[in-house]
Image (cartoon, rainbow, N blue to C red; front, side):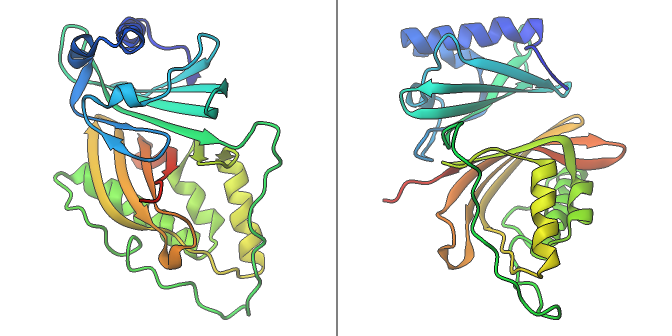
Amino acid sequence: MHTTVPEGLATTRAAYHAARRTGDNSGLAPLLAPDFTAIDLSGAVHGSDGAAMLPLASVEAAATAADYGDLVLVTERDPSAAEGNVVSVEVWVKQGGADGWRLLVHHANVLADPSAPHSHPTPQGRPADAPPPLCENPCLTVPYQPGEPAEADIITAFQTLERAVTRNDADEWVKHMADEFVVYRTRQNLTTKASRAQMLSEHGAINAETFVAAVEAMRLWVFGDAAVMRADHLMPGIRRPPYRATRVWVKRDGRWQMALSQQTTRAAG
């Protein structure tokens, strides 16, 4: 699935980054989708003028692409950036114009140093009959009214996988995750589908209490068999700082699966 940037998009993307480097805001405007959102390293959200708030990658930064038809996800990693180990995701969608490609979301994040060991809080075991934590939002409801059947199906998949997390049910969780799934979190190492499933299995073995973050706000866009979910989250009990997430979904064999979750902590204030 991961490949080089498609030729047609490569031209548009080169124009986007050239405009950013020269500060040509008038050149940026035609390349952005009407709902364009930029999320910077502090978790702040910007509109069409927000590309200037994002870090500029070095020329050596490695970029990979995942081609989902009417949506292409470009991931650019710059471990030597001045801000730290920066990963930026660009969600390009077919949305009019001569070449058809427009940038819907550009979302930046700082991960842990590549050499840092993976670390997660040690889960605490509970009695086997202890129930999972309550999860009204997002397990049963989210603050978003779907506008089409595909959106409703994506929300159902999202709620199902979040319920699986609260139950440490790795077997159910993996059904809703694409094989290439990866999650990026601020100041943490990236997590793959396999590593996350293993963690859930380990938590399940001791019936650990596993929480998921509530959704404060959500938007969805569907492009054929791919979709984008933008959401702001707040963890119950402030077990984790509030954060903003961009998720990419793909439909395979009649099932919506999450392919990416980019999560940037919102700075206090």
